Image (cartoon, rainbow, N blue to C red):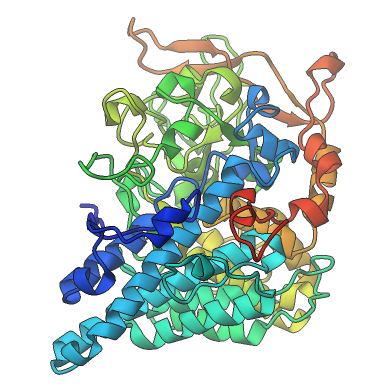
Length: 621
């Protein structure tokens, strides 16, 4: 059962950061409760903490309609590459007045505002609550949660806007002067949110993230990430400025060595970013959703999301916005499996013969199976392609139902492919989804830790230890392991002597994008930026040509309606690398527009939104 954070409907004044009339800020409202009037006890404070968590669910904070268009793993479908909302971010034609630029800022600072209200209330309640040890422990936990969330919103603002120079709020503003805070330097912002994280580590219980509430481990993970993300590399190979690897590793080790988390094995029926694997032993932080509607919740923070409808296809009650980039599909398919791992084999449903996972690989009805494919477990649980005929997709083969612009593949993550045959069945007339968004899990910590061990590709002494953590992730997916024989007896290793530079290349182009695609907060865009390769990556990808090797894909239906098995033709293509052998018009490329339009000084970060600079007299233009 989902362990949701309940959402309290607070009877309190939430002062908007946008469009506040002067008389609203200066005239007393007789119907408005003050903080001291509302927060009478710790139960009231806990309701305030719930309201901070609720702000994580604002759809423009982690905005899967827009965010993939800013990195390189997801790409808008062709009709949406030139139009709002996603197209203007893919094309880099947005400005400081556009929706996501404004929406993220507003969502972050409303969360900060709510956290500061809670922190002020806790300070006022201190004398009355510390007499009792149970109350004192509860007080410490609530303060730790509020500090962590205030730090997290500031951290995300620092990662998103104006090269890290943003506004700091450490109190709930009331007057015009309170709101008109100046921009602070990146160093000041970094010190501020890190102090919040450090204090949260001290106050919060050391426990895994199981009940929807943050713990000391969560705060330690984000503090460690902030050290790793501290400065941009100049070339993705260890010219690193002031990245503090040792401090990052210290925080990651609290999570890795504490014994409270483990990599969760894939399970039949959906076990990566579905409703069936939420709050599992790998999870460190999730945004909680369910597909119910709760009376009294606003339309922008209701209990559900619409992300499933963005990534499944029109044949499943969706309005596809983004699909996996061709290079990502290709890398997934090329990642070698471990032939010694029994998970890579299935028993064919008709012949009874054992074969590799993927399409059936047998010739039947005088039709040649000329598209035999191997589909590894990580591919099969992250994206879906026509060749994957063993893992159902909305209770059918993807090849049997794929439509429109997703006919060569789409994302599995954050879909309800495992529990329904149509997204509309999850709700009435709209595509609500209860799949939690995964912000952080142990696999991400392992990969960040591996990056620290090799110091971003500059330290060969860390390669052996880094391979341990990379191979644990690969073994979970029954993939071929890297380097000399290691901790997994009987597994297949490639035997390659990797350098730190080689391993960093693998983290950049294989392990992080394939393991973590769509997860986290702006995960891929921030990775490319901090490695110093965001523009060069688009330029590199824009030179690769692809084509669909056939206008049709022949798939085998073992149980058609007429009960006569046979091959069927679907409107699907298999992506191949290279120019089309006969028709140049069918050759495709990707990312040519971002490669041309991305200006690092303008597009690596969002600008301060005009809705803020126009109202804050200390910001101007």
